[in-house]
Image 1 (cartoon, rainbow, N blue to C red):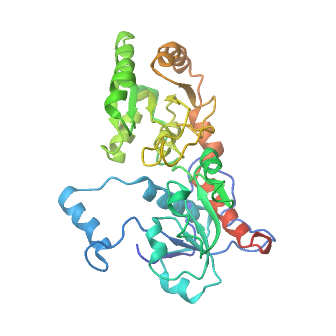
Image 2: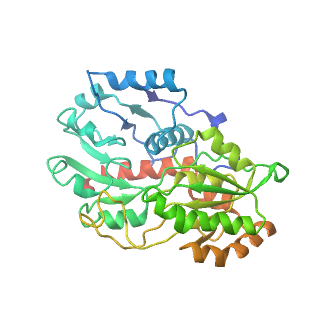
Image 3: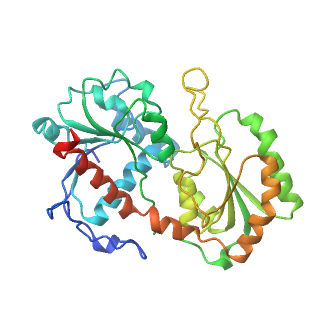
Length: 361
């Protein structure tokens, strides 16, 4: 989809048990919401102009259906949320935005889009633009950037010394696509979600294997899924047969896969080690940040429990598992209260409208 404009929402697409937001939410002052100009690109041209459209088609022919990246999932879920609340938007309409330099351009995808022409528009950037502000200290200085979005509060706090106009915005989760499965379908005690991204061999020894040994000794059945090595349908099926999930990731800016599990009614025991932001592209030489870094930035007592290391897992597992059996957790309630498609889309609209107010300049 290169250029599109959503004019009307489809009421039938509203999820069961969704939010009570009106289908066409009212803007401040009682008017209609602004039409959004959305720009999302995952890839730049590599060999010749326009080949970014051809390469995914060739990949699909050769390798089958591709894995959906986190950046694309953000874009797709935002569009789905806007559809549901009846907000109009255009997608990658570069011709329109060139003709209307007074309109806000919302650039969600990769930052190379900023290099494609001389942007005269006010800009709302993110959330899938930069991993850290030091990448963009020079490239943004001559642009009218009204705000930069990142997925969560701890990430915003890390970026704020460089970007004063930074805000936290989490995209919504497709709660109707990720529903709870009936208890009688549950055949696996634990889904072990391995998203350890860096120094995996070390954590295989220090964390993953001790956890698996502990679960085996406890008599629990375990299924393992590895980040980047599955299709969404495989993950959905695994959640449907699992009574709980162990989530292993050094830190997360949002954690969509974890939130898909919560939406599916699966309680989560999450490795939340805290400490510094340790992306090896930046740490320890370029960036040192310790300020509430978390692997589950959207999480409360309804969702499950957390642990910091292998010893913490061993100490907390029995308590977590007994509460799973007792039905003490209500993870889907947390998602429905905070992270629906409608809530995410409405929040995005509110940010976009706020940055275009005169006082925001």
